[in-house]
Length: 178
Image (cartoon, rainbow, N blue to C red):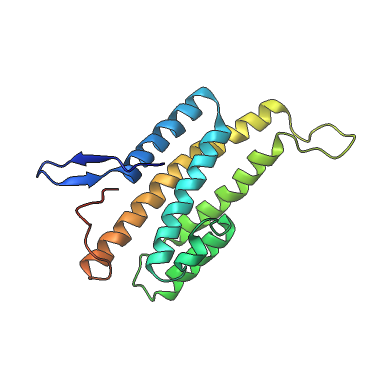
């Protein structure tokens, strides 16, 4: 059974730290994986972070319902499309990160290439790229994914602060951190 870790805050309030600790561990794993050349692990965790931040925004602006995101999440390409629609439809209400959305979508394609290129080849033919070139492309995708995950996380925090300031989202619960 998964337990929710707690810590005492400076004001003596007990707070849940599960998600915060998981994100901290995710970033530790991304950085370690890239350093050690385990690019697939980094890419997978980066996509998870990107998807989570996009889903959180889409749920907050009512573009996704809880039933659509519990269990199996929508495909990454669909999340990106909904993210773009939500920002374009907001009439300037939410910061429209058009360039960021474009870069995340371009990274999605690089991620697909990196993940599938290792064993991709037409039957009876040699792989279209060398193992060395494949690893170089995977490293680039892993590094770009880390940068984009940070940018999307920062964008998400700005939108959340705006929503809280406007009273659209309840203030942080004293039981939650992260």
